[in-house]
View (cartoon, rainbow, N blue to C red):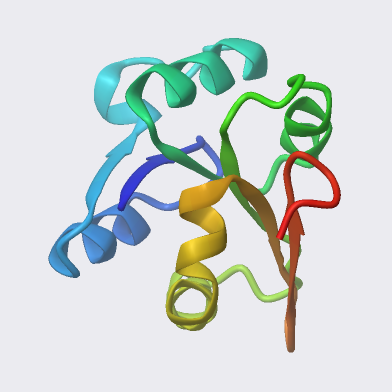
Length: 123
């Protein structure tokens, strides 16, 4: 899978994804740490990447994207230690890889995750 990590995500998460065989980039690595969310979304679409973020705006951006194929992994965690993020992300990738490849927002919480398919109603 192809990922694009937003600024709030530790670079070690990107390194972990790469070690698992994924194509992962971090905005900071490309000098894009000030890129607006709309442009991040467009970049992810053009590069066929899944956005990994803590920023709630991306859920809304996807919802308003008029059916454009995009996926977002949205962390909603109290414990934001990198090891915890990786543990939670690992479970989500095992459970929801197909949804992410087809276009979905996956919200990762402390003890569960929710999948919202896009366009709405799609499964």
